Image (cartoon, rainbow, N blue to C red; front, side):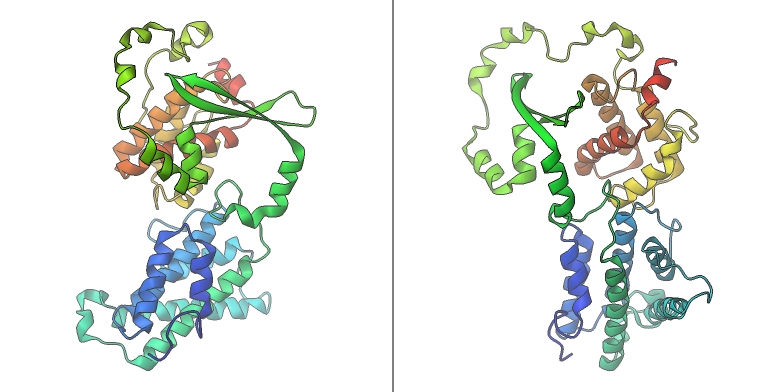
Length: 376
């Protein structure tokens, strides 16, 4: 093909890839499309179709919307993404419906062309069904037009801040409101002889504070990856001096539970509850949890058993004031990790996923959960 990259006649592929730099699938399919444009037409149909599906799923994730089904088609994903953006086909009630209907038909056409010419279509050998250059160009422009409609509809709409992949910089006006409203205090504590930064945030004259506990490594990893690598290269692999002072382990641990007798039902190790049905105090969070798991990439199609098991495990490890008590939150995270492990989630992602699940639950759980827990 004559077009060198998607930044020229096909700008919307690049727009989508640049908008969500943290979405690796978009970057992967964008690179594959550029490879096809550069002269290798094999797979162009499949790559464009997959790119559009990734954009739709990402947009639904921005608004916390679940997938339309366990195995949605491209057209179903497009309809769901447009609906999340406020562009829903109302069967001819407005002139916009004709436009939306046309794009739905375009999506159907892409799927049909994929089935007829794609490299994995019905077991065909892709090298035997080379797409003609004019067909490939038409397909690329169709896909670019669909992506353009989605991106243009997204402009000016605020996503769900709990689950969005948008970078911090896109919310400058909201961040300024927070920065002008909070007071900040910081101190350092030690847990198991390791330093932890405690950052306390308060708003106005309110007595409540939001306490963030951040390990130095987590702070560097999340904010300055170059500094993280630099510190890692200077840090010794082993601390031999600490090994010689084993008698120091007799000092009381930081999170000793002996001072909290009111939670006697939670002195045992983290409980893991795997259930098919759940109707406890967190049951109303099921739909929100499904959307969160999908948008965070933990599981593309979480089943009911996973959702119910996570909520039941959370309840089994919670207690009075669980949203502020770190020992109960630690048990929840251990329980989450075990449930995700049983579901077959990538082991390298389980720890981070459990941390994000706990943060989401603390924000999403109703304020009266503590009272309900106290009566159990």
